[in-house]
Length: 364
Image (cartoon, rainbow, N blue to C red):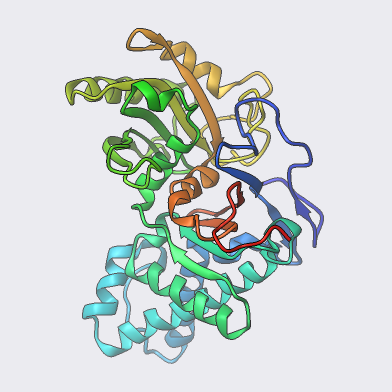
Protein backbone atom coordinates (compact mmCIF):
# COMPACT_ATOMS: atom_id res chain seq x y z
CA UNK A 1 0.00 0.00 0.00
CA UNK A 2 1.15 3.53 -0.68
CA UNK A 3 2.73 5.52 2.12
CA UNK A 4 0.71 8.39 3.56
CA UNK A 5 2.14 10.54 6.29
CA UNK A 6 1.71 9.27 9.84
CA UNK A 7 -1.62 10.21 11.37
CA UNK A 8 -3.20 11.03 8.01
CA UNK A 9 -5.80 9.42 5.82
CA UNK A 10 -5.74 9.17 2.05
CA UNK A 11 -8.99 9.25 0.15
CA UNK A 12 -10.19 10.10 -3.31
CA UNK A 13 -10.39 13.86 -3.78
CA UNK A 14 -12.32 14.03 -7.05
CA UNK A 15 -15.42 12.14 -8.07
CA UNK A 16 -14.71 10.00 -11.14
CA UNK A 17 -16.89 10.71 -14.15
CA UNK A 18 -16.33 7.43 -16.00
CA UNK A 19 -18.16 4.15 -15.49
CA UNK A 20 -15.41 2.54 -13.40
CA UNK A 21 -14.87 3.28 -9.72
CA UNK A 22 -17.92 5.55 -9.77
CA UNK A 23 -18.99 7.09 -6.49
CA UNK A 24 -22.47 7.92 -7.76
CA UNK A 25 -24.31 4.61 -8.16
CA UNK A 26 -28.04 4.11 -8.88
CA UNK A 27 -29.06 3.39 -5.28
CA UNK A 28 -26.15 4.62 -3.18
CA UNK A 29 -23.38 7.19 -3.03
CA UNK A 30 -20.01 5.65 -2.18
CA UNK A 31 -18.71 8.22 0.31
CA UNK A 32 -15.27 6.61 0.62
CA UNK A 33 -13.30 3.46 -0.12
CA UNK A 34 -9.78 2.08 0.15
CA UNK A 35 -8.98 4.52 2.96
CA UNK A 36 -5.39 4.25 4.14
CA UNK A 37 -4.94 5.44 7.74
CA UNK A 38 -1.53 5.40 9.35
CA UNK A 39 -0.22 5.82 12.86
CA UNK A 40 3.19 5.29 14.44
CA UNK A 41 2.84 1.52 13.97
CA UNK A 42 1.98 1.64 10.25
CA UNK A 43 -1.36 1.11 8.54
CA UNK A 44 -4.16 1.12 11.09
CA UNK A 45 -6.18 -1.42 9.10
CA UNK A 46 -3.42 -4.01 9.50
CA UNK A 47 -4.45 -4.30 13.16
CA UNK A 48 -7.69 -5.98 12.01
CA UNK A 49 -6.42 -8.30 9.28
CA UNK A 50 -6.30 -12.09 9.29
CA UNK A 51 -2.57 -11.74 9.98
CA UNK A 52 -3.37 -9.68 13.09
CA UNK A 53 -5.44 -12.53 14.52
CA UNK A 54 -2.55 -14.94 13.94
CA UNK A 55 -0.24 -12.50 15.73
CA UNK A 56 -2.60 -12.32 18.72
CA UNK A 57 -2.72 -16.10 18.96
CA UNK A 58 1.02 -16.47 18.45
CA UNK A 59 1.80 -13.92 21.18
CA UNK A 60 -0.35 -15.87 23.62
CA UNK A 61 1.37 -19.10 22.65
CA UNK A 62 4.80 -17.48 23.14
CA UNK A 63 3.79 -16.51 26.65
CA UNK A 64 2.54 -20.02 27.41
CA UNK A 65 5.67 -21.62 25.92
CA UNK A 66 7.74 -19.66 28.42
CA UNK A 67 5.76 -21.53 31.06
CA UNK A 68 6.10 -24.84 29.09
CA UNK A 69 2.31 -25.02 28.79
CA UNK A 70 1.34 -24.35 25.13
CA UNK A 71 -1.68 -26.58 24.40
CA UNK A 72 -1.37 -26.22 20.61
CA UNK A 73 1.08 -27.79 18.19
CA UNK A 74 2.72 -26.55 14.99
CA UNK A 75 3.12 -23.12 13.45
CA UNK A 76 0.31 -20.70 14.32
CA UNK A 77 -0.05 -19.45 10.75
CA UNK A 78 -0.61 -22.99 9.50
CA UNK A 79 -3.66 -23.55 11.72
CA UNK A 80 -6.70 -23.30 9.44
CA UNK A 81 -10.00 -21.57 10.21
CA UNK A 82 -11.63 -24.99 10.33
CA UNK A 83 -9.06 -26.22 12.86
CA UNK A 84 -9.59 -23.16 15.03
CA UNK A 85 -13.36 -23.69 14.95
CA UNK A 86 -12.83 -27.32 15.94
CA UNK A 87 -10.65 -26.28 18.87
CA UNK A 88 -13.46 -24.03 20.07
CA UNK A 89 -16.09 -26.75 19.90
CA UNK A 90 -14.14 -29.94 20.54
CA UNK A 91 -10.76 -28.96 22.00
CA UNK A 92 -9.92 -29.41 25.64
CA UNK A 93 -10.66 -26.43 27.92
CA UNK A 94 -7.12 -25.02 27.65
CA UNK A 95 -7.16 -25.12 23.86
CA UNK A 96 -10.61 -23.56 23.60
CA UNK A 97 -9.72 -20.91 26.17
CA UNK A 98 -6.57 -20.03 24.23
CA UNK A 99 -8.55 -19.50 21.02
CA UNK A 100 -11.13 -17.45 22.93
CA UNK A 101 -8.34 -15.28 24.34
CA UNK A 102 -7.06 -14.62 20.82
CA UNK A 103 -10.61 -13.76 19.72
CA UNK A 104 -10.85 -11.26 22.57
CA UNK A 105 -7.55 -9.63 21.63
CA UNK A 106 -8.53 -9.42 17.97
CA UNK A 107 -11.99 -8.04 18.83
CA UNK A 108 -10.35 -5.28 20.86
CA UNK A 109 -8.14 -4.47 17.85
CA UNK A 110 -11.12 -4.47 15.47
CA UNK A 111 -13.04 -2.15 17.81
CA UNK A 112 -9.99 0.15 17.93
CA UNK A 113 -9.82 0.29 14.14
CA UNK A 114 -13.53 1.05 13.86
CA UNK A 115 -13.19 3.86 16.40
CA UNK A 116 -10.51 5.36 14.14
CA UNK A 117 -12.71 5.05 11.06
CA UNK A 118 -15.72 6.74 12.64
CA UNK A 119 -13.59 9.79 13.42
CA UNK A 120 -13.38 10.41 9.68
CA UNK A 121 -15.88 12.70 8.00
CA UNK A 122 -16.99 10.01 5.53
CA UNK A 123 -17.66 7.54 8.38
CA UNK A 124 -18.94 9.92 11.06
CA UNK A 125 -22.62 9.14 10.40
CA UNK A 126 -22.28 5.40 9.81
CA UNK A 127 -25.05 3.50 11.61
CA UNK A 128 -24.21 -0.07 10.59
CA UNK A 129 -21.06 -1.87 9.47
CA UNK A 130 -21.20 -5.07 7.43
CA UNK A 131 -18.15 -7.28 8.02
CA UNK A 132 -17.09 -9.60 5.22
CA UNK A 133 -13.92 -11.15 3.87
CA UNK A 134 -12.56 -14.63 4.38
CA UNK A 135 -12.09 -14.28 8.14
CA UNK A 136 -15.84 -13.84 8.58
CA UNK A 137 -16.36 -17.35 7.13
CA UNK A 138 -15.65 -19.09 10.44
CA UNK A 139 -17.08 -19.35 13.93
CA UNK A 140 -13.94 -17.65 15.21
CA UNK A 141 -14.57 -14.73 12.88
CA UNK A 142 -18.26 -14.50 13.81
CA UNK A 143 -17.41 -14.44 17.52
CA UNK A 144 -14.77 -11.76 16.97
CA UNK A 145 -17.27 -9.62 15.08
CA UNK A 146 -19.91 -10.10 17.75
CA UNK A 147 -17.48 -9.31 20.57
CA UNK A 148 -16.22 -6.17 18.80
CA UNK A 149 -19.84 -5.04 18.48
CA UNK A 150 -20.36 -5.46 22.23
CA UNK A 151 -17.15 -3.52 22.96
CA UNK A 152 -18.30 -0.65 20.78
CA UNK A 153 -21.76 -0.68 22.34
CA UNK A 154 -20.41 -0.53 25.89
CA UNK A 155 -18.18 2.36 24.79
CA UNK A 156 -21.27 4.28 23.71
CA UNK A 157 -20.86 3.86 19.96
CA UNK A 158 -24.33 3.31 18.50
CA UNK A 159 -23.12 1.23 15.56
CA UNK A 160 -24.49 -2.16 14.56
CA UNK A 161 -21.82 -4.67 13.53
CA UNK A 162 -23.21 -7.49 11.37
CA UNK A 163 -21.56 -10.29 9.35
CA UNK A 164 -22.23 -10.21 5.61
CA UNK A 165 -25.23 -12.44 4.91
CA UNK A 166 -23.96 -14.02 1.68
CA UNK A 167 -21.02 -16.37 1.89
CA UNK A 168 -18.01 -14.00 1.64
CA UNK A 169 -16.79 -15.75 -1.53
CA UNK A 170 -20.18 -15.17 -3.16
CA UNK A 171 -20.74 -11.64 -1.83
CA UNK A 172 -17.84 -10.39 -3.95
CA UNK A 173 -19.67 -11.67 -7.03
CA UNK A 174 -23.28 -10.88 -6.11
CA UNK A 175 -22.46 -7.22 -5.46
CA UNK A 176 -21.65 -6.74 -9.15
CA UNK A 177 -25.38 -6.88 -9.90
CA UNK A 178 -25.66 -3.45 -8.28
CA UNK A 179 -23.17 -2.02 -10.80
CA UNK A 180 -25.16 -3.14 -13.82
CA UNK A 181 -27.11 -0.58 -15.92
CA UNK A 182 -30.90 -0.76 -15.69
CA UNK A 183 -31.35 -2.23 -19.18
CA UNK A 184 -29.63 -5.40 -17.97
CA UNK A 185 -32.64 -6.21 -15.81
CA UNK A 186 -35.17 -5.89 -18.61
CA UNK A 187 -34.05 -8.66 -20.95
CA UNK A 188 -31.65 -10.87 -18.98
CA UNK A 189 -31.76 -13.01 -15.85
CA UNK A 190 -28.06 -13.36 -15.04
CA UNK A 191 -24.64 -11.75 -15.46
CA UNK A 192 -20.94 -12.56 -15.22
CA UNK A 193 -18.88 -11.40 -12.24
CA UNK A 194 -15.20 -11.45 -11.25
CA UNK A 195 -13.67 -11.07 -7.78
CA UNK A 196 -9.91 -10.50 -7.83
CA UNK A 197 -7.93 -10.79 -4.62
CA UNK A 198 -4.35 -10.92 -3.43
CA UNK A 199 -4.42 -14.73 -3.27
CA UNK A 200 -7.38 -15.83 -5.41
CA UNK A 201 -9.34 -14.97 -8.52
CA UNK A 202 -12.96 -16.11 -8.63
CA UNK A 203 -15.35 -15.93 -11.57
CA UNK A 204 -19.02 -16.79 -11.50
CA UNK A 205 -22.53 -16.38 -12.82
CA UNK A 206 -24.90 -14.28 -10.71
CA UNK A 207 -28.51 -15.35 -11.13
CA UNK A 208 -30.60 -12.20 -10.49
CA UNK A 209 -33.90 -13.89 -9.51
CA UNK A 210 -35.84 -10.65 -9.77
CA UNK A 211 -39.09 -12.58 -9.80
CA UNK A 212 -38.39 -13.55 -6.18
CA UNK A 213 -37.11 -10.11 -5.14
CA UNK A 214 -36.91 -7.05 -7.43
CA UNK A 215 -34.35 -5.45 -5.08
CA UNK A 216 -31.92 -8.35 -5.78
CA UNK A 217 -31.87 -9.59 -2.19
CA UNK A 218 -32.44 -13.11 -3.57
CA UNK A 219 -29.63 -12.90 -6.14
CA UNK A 220 -27.27 -15.86 -5.90
CA UNK A 221 -24.21 -17.41 -7.52
CA UNK A 222 -25.36 -20.28 -9.75
CA UNK A 223 -21.85 -21.44 -10.72
CA UNK A 224 -18.29 -20.31 -10.03
CA UNK A 225 -14.63 -21.18 -10.45
CA UNK A 226 -11.74 -20.36 -8.13
CA UNK A 227 -8.06 -20.09 -9.00
CA UNK A 228 -5.50 -19.59 -6.25
CA UNK A 229 -2.91 -17.63 -8.21
CA UNK A 230 -0.71 -17.14 -5.14
CA UNK A 231 0.30 -20.80 -5.38
CA UNK A 232 1.55 -20.47 -8.97
CA UNK A 233 3.11 -16.98 -9.09
CA UNK A 234 2.11 -16.25 -12.71
CA UNK A 235 3.03 -13.15 -14.67
CA UNK A 236 0.37 -10.50 -15.11
CA UNK A 237 -0.34 -11.56 -18.70
CA UNK A 238 -0.60 -15.21 -17.66
CA UNK A 239 -3.04 -14.22 -14.92
CA UNK A 240 -5.22 -12.26 -17.35
CA UNK A 241 -5.22 -15.13 -19.84
CA UNK A 242 -6.26 -17.57 -17.09
CA UNK A 243 -8.95 -15.15 -15.90
CA UNK A 244 -10.46 -14.88 -19.36
CA UNK A 245 -10.38 -18.65 -19.80
CA UNK A 246 -12.35 -18.90 -16.57
CA UNK A 247 -14.82 -16.29 -17.81
CA UNK A 248 -15.41 -18.20 -21.04
CA UNK A 249 -15.97 -21.36 -19.04
CA UNK A 250 -18.61 -19.65 -16.91
CA UNK A 251 -20.32 -18.20 -19.99
CA UNK A 252 -20.57 -21.71 -21.46
CA UNK A 253 -21.94 -23.02 -18.16
CA UNK A 254 -24.64 -20.32 -18.09
CA UNK A 255 -25.74 -21.30 -21.59
CA UNK A 256 -25.84 -24.97 -20.55
CA UNK A 257 -27.97 -23.99 -17.54
CA UNK A 258 -30.46 -22.21 -19.80
CA UNK A 259 -29.83 -18.74 -18.39
CA UNK A 260 -30.36 -15.54 -20.38
CA UNK A 261 -26.90 -14.11 -19.76
CA UNK A 262 -26.42 -10.36 -20.04
CA UNK A 263 -23.49 -9.04 -22.11
CA UNK A 264 -22.04 -7.58 -18.91
CA UNK A 265 -19.05 -8.41 -16.70
CA UNK A 266 -18.77 -6.85 -13.25
CA UNK A 267 -15.21 -6.81 -11.89
CA UNK A 268 -14.09 -6.31 -8.30
CA UNK A 269 -10.39 -5.52 -7.89
CA UNK A 270 -8.23 -4.21 -5.05
CA UNK A 271 -7.12 -0.60 -5.16
CA UNK A 272 -8.31 2.80 -6.28
CA UNK A 273 -10.15 2.42 -9.57
CA UNK A 274 -9.86 5.17 -12.18
CA UNK A 275 -12.83 6.21 -14.33
CA UNK A 276 -11.34 4.60 -17.46
CA UNK A 277 -10.37 1.31 -15.81
CA UNK A 278 -6.84 2.05 -14.60
CA UNK A 279 -5.81 0.95 -11.10
CA UNK A 280 -4.21 3.85 -9.27
CA UNK A 281 -2.82 2.11 -6.18
CA UNK A 282 -3.57 -0.79 -3.87
CA UNK A 283 -2.99 -3.69 -6.29
CA UNK A 284 0.51 -4.54 -5.10
CA UNK A 285 -0.49 -8.06 -4.00
CA UNK A 286 -1.62 -9.04 -7.49
CA UNK A 287 0.73 -10.94 -9.84
CA UNK A 288 2.83 -8.48 -11.83
CA UNK A 289 2.33 -4.73 -12.17
CA UNK A 290 -1.39 -3.98 -12.44
CA UNK A 291 -0.84 -0.28 -11.69
CA UNK A 292 1.23 0.41 -14.81
CA UNK A 293 0.04 3.32 -16.95
CA UNK A 294 0.39 0.97 -19.94
CA UNK A 295 -2.03 -1.60 -18.50
CA UNK A 296 -5.81 -1.44 -18.44
CA UNK A 297 -7.65 -4.42 -16.96
CA UNK A 298 -11.00 -3.47 -18.48
CA UNK A 299 -9.53 -3.23 -21.98
CA UNK A 300 -7.69 -6.53 -21.49
CA UNK A 301 -10.89 -8.35 -20.55
CA UNK A 302 -12.85 -6.82 -23.43
CA UNK A 303 -10.13 -7.82 -25.88
CA UNK A 304 -10.24 -11.47 -24.79
CA UNK A 305 -14.02 -11.68 -24.22
CA UNK A 306 -15.31 -9.25 -26.88
CA UNK A 307 -18.87 -10.59 -27.01
CA UNK A 308 -21.35 -12.48 -24.86
CA UNK A 309 -24.03 -14.09 -26.97
CA UNK A 310 -24.70 -11.77 -29.90
CA UNK A 311 -23.83 -8.57 -28.06
CA UNK A 312 -20.66 -6.60 -27.42
CA UNK A 313 -19.35 -7.09 -23.89
CA UNK A 314 -19.75 -4.26 -21.38
CA UNK A 315 -17.26 -4.37 -18.50
CA UNK A 316 -17.64 -2.30 -15.32
CA UNK A 317 -15.03 -2.38 -12.55
CA UNK A 318 -14.97 -1.18 -8.96
CA UNK A 319 -13.01 -1.78 -5.79
CA UNK A 320 -13.53 -5.29 -4.40
CA UNK A 321 -14.61 -4.13 -0.93
CA UNK A 322 -17.14 -1.72 -2.47
CA UNK A 323 -18.67 -4.59 -4.45
CA UNK A 324 -18.76 -6.97 -1.49
CA UNK A 325 -20.58 -4.27 0.47
CA UNK A 326 -23.06 -3.70 -2.35
CA UNK A 327 -24.21 -7.32 -2.03
CA UNK A 328 -25.74 -6.29 1.31
CA UNK A 329 -27.46 -3.16 0.03
CA UNK A 330 -31.05 -4.57 0.07
CA UNK A 331 -30.68 -5.25 3.81
CA UNK A 332 -29.40 -1.72 4.50
CA UNK A 333 -32.55 0.17 3.56
CA UNK A 334 -33.53 0.88 7.18
CA UNK A 335 -30.45 3.08 7.68
CA UNK A 336 -29.08 6.01 5.72
CA UNK A 337 -25.32 5.72 6.28
CA UNK A 338 -23.56 2.36 6.38
CA UNK A 339 -20.18 0.78 5.63
CA UNK A 340 -18.32 -2.44 4.97
CA UNK A 341 -15.07 -3.89 6.28
CA UNK A 342 -13.58 -6.96 4.62
CA UNK A 343 -11.13 -8.90 6.78
CA UNK A 344 -8.64 -10.88 4.75
CA UNK A 345 -4.99 -10.43 3.79
CA UNK A 346 -5.60 -6.77 4.60
CA UNK A 347 -8.63 -4.77 5.68
CA UNK A 348 -10.83 -3.56 2.81
CA UNK A 349 -13.22 -0.72 3.52
CA UNK A 350 -15.98 1.35 1.97
CA UNK A 351 -18.76 3.63 3.22
CA UNK A 352 -22.11 4.46 1.62
CA UNK A 353 -25.07 6.80 1.81
CA UNK A 354 -28.40 5.50 0.56
CA UNK A 355 -30.15 7.74 -1.95
CA UNK A 356 -33.55 6.91 -0.45
CA UNK A 357 -34.01 7.98 3.14
CA UNK A 358 -35.25 5.35 5.63
CA UNK A 359 -38.88 5.72 6.63
CA UNK A 360 -39.39 7.98 9.62
CA UNK A 361 -36.22 10.01 9.07
CA UNK A 362 -36.51 13.72 8.45
CA UNK A 363 -34.41 15.68 5.99
CA UNK A 364 -32.91 17.88 8.68
